[in-house]
Length: 592
Image 1 (cartoon, rainbow, N blue to C red):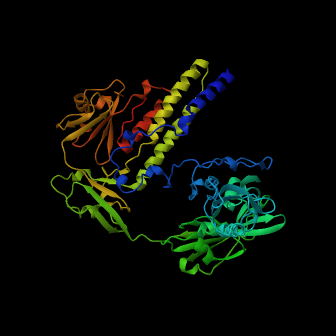
Image 2 (image 1 turned 90 degrees about the horizontal axis):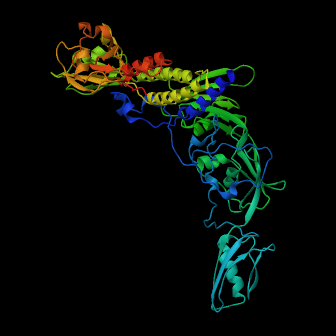
Image 3 (image 1 turned 180 degrees about the vertical axis):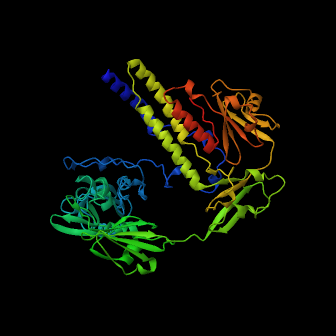
């Protein structure tokens, strides 16, 4: 029996896994009711406000695979973002420049004209002669550094600069044909080489390329510098034990400077260990861990790299030397000239006291919509400045707040997560029951995904409170003045959801009947009545004719689905979430 339970759980998990990975498409009709924040800022449903970019995978060069890789070297995860942005960073890395090596340098070799390139053994030279003697040939530089031109003989081209190549060959041909022969010569292809890449890179090995390829090409083929152990300041090109050139990749990252050097067959690119670092966070354009060549660093250099934002007023410096951890807190004006040490952490902050706030007043009113007010201004003082008209419903003032919208979204997500866990851990005693659980779980995961896409409105309940007019407003609050009308919205599990004309004395069941009555999947035991001021009432079946539940103009009557007919196991959780969505977003989410 225990084995069958395990098999049933594994089968259910395998089937619903795609829904956990976010495979379902967004349902545009489930985004919630009126949400005033949609037109002012990105949806709060985005969480921490980070940008998400969808980009194609980088092009793979057939020559990018190592010819001889280090045994046991781990394969890096495939890149999911192009060069130029931190989206390609390895998970958890905070090193400045960790996004540099994403595969973008391995796509194509450099084919342009480089006047400083020195011709070397193995290069291919395109030679064209016309006039008294005609020739069109591609000639390879031999081990002696020559190309052989028929009827002319060997021509020494090794170490000749690219911009002097045509002149050199023309002079040699002129020794044989003094006139009536034209010469055109150019570098057709650089020498193929194999270069070792080792040190603190992700995939040390021997890689193929061209002698004209940049050092970034070979580093990219090796997976790039290991951001947690390797140095971006200490990259060397070696021939044997001789260092031919040293590079700092910061010069390329910050200034686009990358000195060229022809690589030879068997050269080695060596990435050294990471040097001294200082971590920057907070309000900065570049909140990363920076590497320096010395243990003591001037704070001015750190600020130049980090680029603190204009609103920064203070700096917190965490000292991590020795056995005691100390913290310095400075004004931004005191930061220049400060000595920082290896391992220190710098946090740029803004200690600003609230001065004024911006509040919008929308809806049925005749005055201005934007108010700039002193911090601490109350709702009542703003309403005293609003120009109401004869169509304004002053008894149903609505207040929407971003922080409330965020909290409502968090609470909904927590409830959905709890339901999700229950679905995935449900037990089955028989094979037949396990099969039913799989189908049920598939439908439940689809419904949960749809519910996650709903955005609450962030409305504050103002009704039934004598202190409502004393609520202190926050920056970005939206006050909405509803219009007086004679409509009552009826939606959810009714035959004909619509807007009905208000009739004095009609109760909730009267409006349900005017909308065709209950649908087949409706919960006929209770009805949800939403007021425009944010309050709501749950009307039980025995109270449908009760005058205490009298409908008012502008109310919404919501008939929720009967979850007990769908699944008894999750009925309580579903009912709670349905009410949560209905109250916070004014949406009736149909159960599968």
